[in-house]
Length: 174
Image (cartoon, rainbow, N blue to C red; front, side):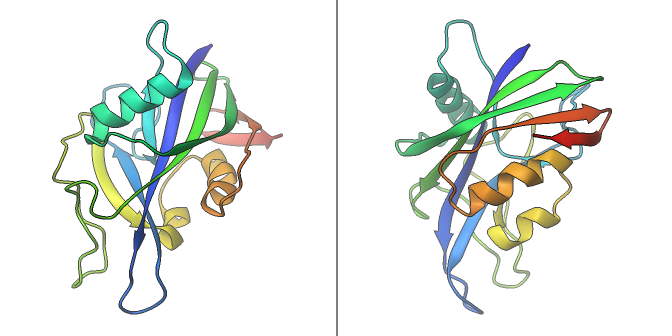
C-alpha cells in the first residue's frame, strides 16, 4: 500500500466585487507519464520517502513543488483510497494557511478574475494556480476528492474516509 500526503494551502483574498474569502493553491496534473491524476486538479503533496513521518513528507513535498516553507499547518486525517486499477493508498490530509504576501506568488487578475500561475516555483508535475474557494468544486478532479474537500474548505478539523474506486468511478465512500 502506498502512503502519501496531500496539503491544501489557502490564503486570504480581498475581492473588490464582493466579500473577502480564501483562494487555494491547486495543482493541475499534466506533466508526468502514467500519472493516475493526469487531467485533474489536486492539492500539493506526494509519496513518502523511507523513514519520513507524515509531517516531514508533507513539508518536503510542499517545498519541492511550490518553494513554500510552511510553518503553520493542520493535520486533518487519513483518506483511504481503494482501487481496482491503481495501488491502494493511505493519503494523509493537511490544510495550511499562508499570508498573501509571504511568498512571491501570483494574485487574482483584475481583468479576468482568474488566478495567475505561480512565478516563484516551477513544478515538474503540473501547473500551480491560486483558485478562489468558491470555484474549486467546478474543477475537474476525482469524485471522491469533492467529498473531503467540502468539509476541509468549511474548516472541519477531523476528516477521515475510505473511497472505493473501479477505474475512475467512485463506487462507495465510507
